Length: 281
Length: 324
Ligand SMILES: Nc1ncnc2c1ncn2[C@@H]1O[C@H](COP(=O)(O)OP(=O)(O)OP(=O)(O)O)[C@@H](O)[C@H]1O
Ligand SMILES: [Mg+2]
Image (cartoon, rainbow over the protein chains, first blue to last red):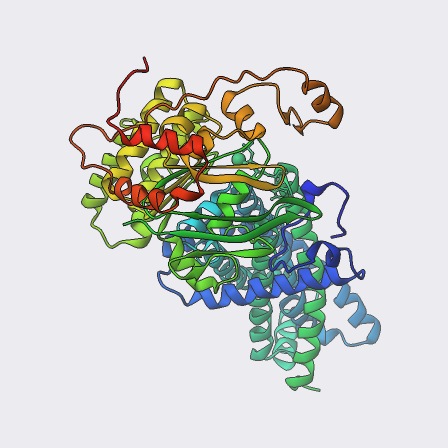
């Protein structure tokens, strides 16, 4: 966010202070810090406003339906080959290690803990988040959000909260779907294509997997959905100048979400593996 | 009664571009004020600063004890419910039809029954001449209709402070006259404090009690209408006369050379004629602001320029309808 010479595109700082113009050109990196801070503030405000009356039920249902309708089919389509690829890869690796009997459990764990939440989050950010960002962005440049604020209605409470809740809900539900489809795809490839035995597949499953694996999968999906929703809203609420700014905002929101997702995924995985004793370990 | 709006030392910039600085004025309660200014002098920015949408770097805007610039966000949200702002482009919600747009503030802030809401919305739509268009989406109506719908939405909660950003732009002259009359009638009915931003000389001449002008990052003047209408300030004279000669150029300011050349062009020195202010439509109560303004103007009598005093005296005398 370096200040360009054209004054029109100078961003409107959230909390301007005297001498803001001079400060804005300050130390490199402060821009990124400020953006992060504002993103956090929006996240906090969203959480707070979730509990403020009146709750926007209709908006939530509409958004839930919308996000679900654009993500379900692609998610199902992506998860079959993804489950297959993991099954194949893990299967051949297990064979090399001489641990064929664990193929099923290992690939299921990989699908449920890693692949499924990530697939869901990427699809939600790519299909749902981008639409949310474009929607909010165009409302912003048409001054609809200003009009709302002027009428004493908070756009965060009214628009952002239902959207973020919708992405979180869809993420959790979709994660269930992708886990099932992915596991089924893995089973199919392991048993039919690689000629594993169904019995070995299932018994390795109960030997390696445990219920907390499913919990962390859903927790991840929930958090990823939250991130996708918040980042889309954050970018959508601050398009820089005109319709082109909205396009850029959509683009950035998807990229930022992807980056954040992978970083957060590492952190969550590390914490989980540290905290929860793994079966058979 | 309307609420007073006190603006003190307001300065707003975007990056290193200062829009205006050190603007100080008071919108007297219940009176109608007009803010003039060439395009791009920051009139819209001023309106948005009054209501707390934009945050000026310095100064404060006091409304009902709340600072709309530096106050707590929660207080600002509450205080905004006193306002009605008509945006320059209408700012209607694109996904809602006109009825829902206008009903929006009622549904958000009141517990009125749907039948009651329907009655109020229809009344407002009739007032701005939009009956029959309530089912249309904002994308399906003309620019002038959008403006009028925006006005109806701004008025639906009977606000105590009404801000109008160029109510006339995009309207034909007849509609503009109607809007002027409606604003005055509205003032007579609900005694709201009003600030109208406009370029329209008719509105400027006939509607307000007070006038102000923004130019060159400054508030050039603000005061009773007679003061500006009789002002010999070149900017004000040029703007109110709609002339090419004067400090205002196409790109807001003229360069020194053009200005120097114009020194030789004699300005016509006929004293500006003041047309009487619009009166509320027959059947409406008289505007309560008139009495308050009279007292206020008399209290500042000694500081007023001579020309303004003469004009005020003429105005206080029984109005004779001598203009065609
Ligand atoms: N969000 C913004 N970011 C940067 N600059 C802005 C922004 N909004 C307004 N400006 C600048 O502030 C100045 C004043 O703009 P404003 O819209 O208030 O003018 P105006 O007096 O309302 O003009 P008009 O009569 O044409 O509507 C302009 O130079 C504009 O470039
Ligand atoms: Mg404007």
